[in-house]
Image (cartoon, rainbow, N blue to C red; front, side):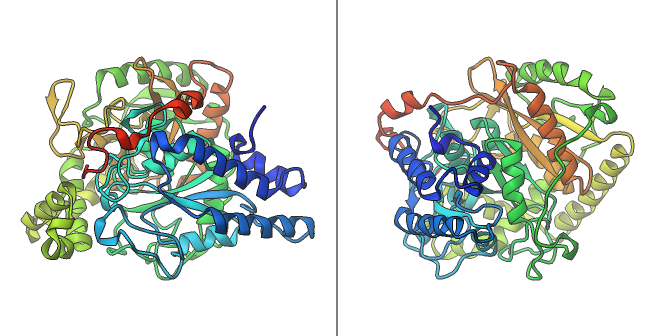
Length: 491
């Protein structure tokens, strides 16, 4: 029998609305699942169970009183440990903030609570979200939901694993080089990178940069869109936020794929995609292509993407973490130290060249989308590897150019600000989840989610392509991930 925590968010919300499911029952079920399996994966290291149960009881009272209910009313939510939560430990995965308890919620968390969401805990991250392997010295490593010895990716790794294992029906994430999409792909759930500004953030240091965004994660597309409806808003503190967004974003999920022109690419012409991933993608692309009006192998001209992203990302790291590296180097991990050092090497000419190149690449993408409606690719270049590996130094025997080069499939879309989503489509030949990336045109958030929903629905009855589910019995019986060597080390 399905436990309440295994219901989709949309199913649970509908049951709560018609008084067929108590928010208390749902919250208790999520807590029980965390207590049963989180020892194996370490997805939610900071928990707020007592206050969550009080909030659930209040939510139950509102339902029984016939009060107006928000979009997320009574739904437990995991919040990524890069976003501040009032009264709940927020560490950014750094020993500098190991005891930091905020006195107020960040804007995104406040909107989730205003929509009726119940914060159940904080999901694990790499130090300051740097790198795509969820490890830190405060809370330790997060293991993949399908094999705890392997990487959950990152930086939203804890959120992805919590969703995959049924600990929460919804979770927040953020994305610069694929931090929503990469862990979604590795753990068989949905991660959506919205257009910059759709989900405002008042805390971004470079307010005009389009690289970092906040976004939703869910077990399916409808759940992800539901969370987005609460996260999307206007906020004058974020210069990229746009007033016309208003308080809600409800994307149409009924898309006729037969009217769309599909571009198919395994690598965008520059990403170091593993052969195993190429084979899995080719199988899925062959299945999907006939559903579209037109389909062809094509991609935008992405030349210069690596160089531009590397510079712009690095100067953002200097702005955010340069002082920490100078003043407390002993409390900073190798990723942060190396990123700041890289950023300090760039001069004015390097930065202006990167900004100019970003603009040129963006304009080439607009020309490409004049002849195509949507692009599909793998979401990530490799199948999951052990989390003890700091980063993939080689892919199919070829060296990667940076510690985040293996994220190139994701940061290609990041650089130009186009919306993108990772949707789970079965397992690869290594037995690990495969994520399909769908990239839309400028401002095409609703289109991307609509296409994702249509593909998800078409694959739902196919055992080889539907969303994979981890073996919870194996996780329940597994030894604690904290017993593994190098668990609480910088990664």
